[in-house]
Length: 162
Image (tube, rainbow, N blue to C red):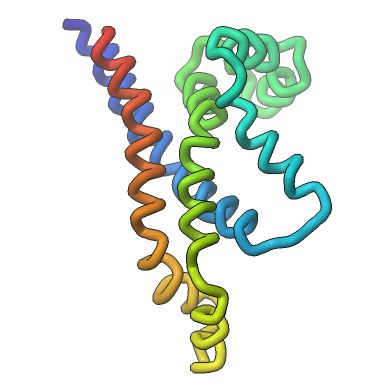
């Protein structure tokens, strides 16, 4: 067994979940409660990695992370190193590929929180942050756990093949 591949897979799984879950909670909550023009487009862009074949997504990420592409050259100007074939590049690609698996369950969970519970919490004197922490997050916890479970198995599947 290749222990370095195991180490990279475990680190990638941990970092993907640690970075992606707070972003997914913010995005899921924003998409669940906000009404704005272009909401459907935002949801479609988030879901885009689901409909693209993995090879196509990987190819486009590889191209966009190159030093000649805007993303790759921006990163190279800031850090002095490229993104392709680095752990940072793999992590960024993992975040992009797993974004819909994290956002969608959390968004659906927030959509099922009754609006009158939030209003009751505000009338009781809770701030929006307190409402989020004390009322909403406990109610959407199953959605958060689903998001974590959906983002981790992709890493475990890679681990099994190494």
